[in-house]
Length: 327
Ligand code: SF4
Ligand code: SF4
Image 1 (cartoon, protein in one colour):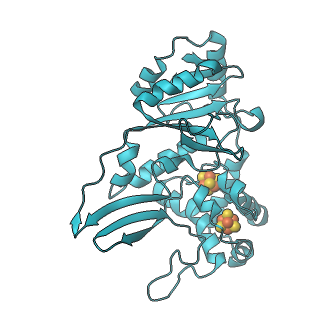
Image 2 (cartoon, rainbow, N blue to C red):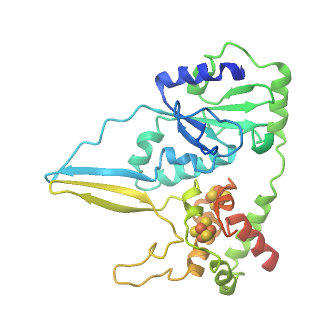
């Protein structure tokens, strides 16, 4: 385990940026934080999960599927420099593992894996959450992890690539710092939201939630799509062609199951024709359909949809209400 003192952080990032396209939490002019390119703003590692999903590095809001000119398919652009993405909380890393499985299933999604398979993933944890709160250690699921111990970053590697990067740092962590990390890794604080989601999942799968509940919750949705756009495990997209006289580019863009047109068919029929049905579908998909298909709930409590929803119907808020009433 290595140690990275705050005054050496910029030099460490500059070294990484010579090899990788480094993305990390940066401070924006409006004082919010986002995952951005190194050099686009001051690094801002403290403050917890950034609101925008870090998985967007591999599944961006808009991505080109192919381009053709004069009826001939053009070769895709040469692969970009490999990414080094820092800023995944442990819950974000769980989300990333889930969508890695999703995009590898059946027809492997080569657009996703073009950037994902060469990327270095770095987690962020320790006493760097909102207001200095503890983000429990990830303990894996990434190449390396930066853990803030109140005065410096401990750098823990989990892969060969992570080991080589950590080896750039000259100083080893103290025995006391290593012990703190081990203790927090072996006994992470309990997460109350997990029990709520599990119970809500059971109730949904047992068909114990009436339509009237979804009518009431759906009434509160203003279709702003913030929940889907923020969610690291939402993977739905629509396809759009951009044409000129000689050229066509097909791209995909994130879609939102809270929008009226999400499942509307060409003939006009809409299987999700009301906000109640769409809201039910958003929650049911993560808590009931995905456990059946993937063996796990596909919400990992990253907190983004509850933070983003202006009307208070993020997944944990809905699950709490559902359990309180039916459970
Ligand atoms: S908390 Fe919300 S945004 Fe985060 S993984 Fe769960 S459903 Fe997605
Ligand atoms: S964030 Fe809330 S209001 Fe906006 S689409 Fe999602 S559920 Fe509806």
